[in-house]
Image (cartoon, rainbow, N blue to C red; front, side, top):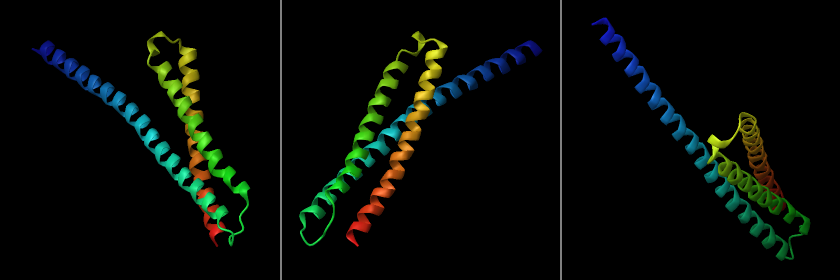
Length: 137
């Protein structure tokens, strides 16, 4: 009777652990989705600023340098590079069982680097907003 109870508890623990693993996989997928959503919104946001700067340059009464266009173009280019890197990482992760531990660690480092790049682009977006408002004033 005690053995049945122990086996039931072990089976229950294994089921709980299995559910936790599935939840972990789902959470990892969700993180990638949120990154994609944030990058899509930032991409649209910078294209909006690019159009805004072009409009400001076209208005003769507002004196703004053409060099201001570099900021949103640079941010859009960085977002494209970040998305490209994320795609390459996900391509490699699709075959994770074929990778050795060093390659997995390298992918983890690349993911951390991409996360930092995303944060930098978010901060650059704030600066772009400030620059655009400053140009309007």
